[in-house]
Length: 434
Image (cartoon, rainbow, N blue to C red; front, side, top):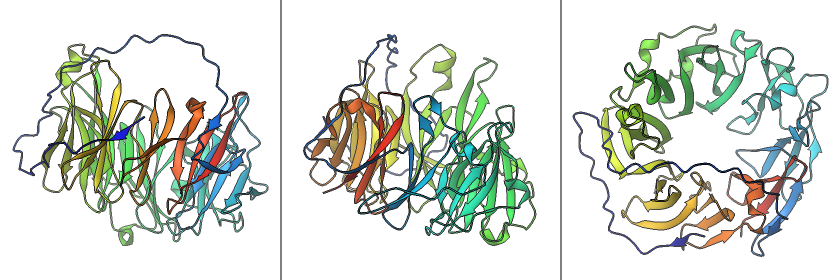
């Protein structure tokens, strides 16, 4: 389990202009470990004594409201996989007792087989979801309802009817939704949609994926060929977002020349946006290492100032990263000489590493106020750590590997975590944060 560390001498990066962007590899590649098949039964779950479990619900996915301690759930994952008898429940603090708000006489089974989910509008007044039946070749219609499951209606825009595999991306403002849908051949299409007026815009088709929005851009990870090698890699890029007042009443296509990528000289991947800026956190690597057969190429974490084109090296050797919501801290991982991931928390104002842990899996989930973060320790499961004093707490003393998908309430007062059941199903626990 991680501990607070004494301040290091890691300097705060100097923001200097880089004439020619470079991946700047610094680490010696580490060979990937050979996977071994090990059969392991789920251990009995025993919560830590410091953890206050408020409720345990038969819920597969949790969608917290943005303005109050309330969430909606679905029951998509049952003992035999995805269920077709989908239920939507509303759950409120402090009792967290579920109440059925499933829309009646509306096909909603596609909620469970698309990546759209149940998405709250930024002010918490509406929930947007993808309805339809799976037998219709994964085509869905977009619907809207209030948090009580009432006032349900289908959007009537051309881009919201019979959408193939829609994916929720982000909200541009209080009423403007950005989503994508699959268009075949590894291509996704970006869509902008006003939920009030149903004005819409089709941004672009990309071979890759759309990501979060910043103040003026939507991030993309685009797949591109690496010379004549026959291999593909990833480059980070952006598409400019129009002002919501510029969205026409009828869908239009915006020319793909608006797509701007970091560079084609080396590989890059979107990680995060620095809060209230158009500065993108990216991981970069040298394509030549992949072409030469390196399984674990050297990577670096850099800051791409999109408007100026400047690229600033932040963490040499880092493999992924995420800013805290207030931008004060940077969580990132590195790979040690055994091939396992190590987690570090950097105070960006002082340049000090204030927390570290080894043998982790992935990047942490920050609380809304940037006071806590939750991460996965490979051997022990989910760990919650406090930024101010570095104190870390295991969520479970036993069976921690069964816990996954931690999500914070809007104010950080509660944390929900998924629990893998012995029968293959999933349930959700709600924890109260002291």
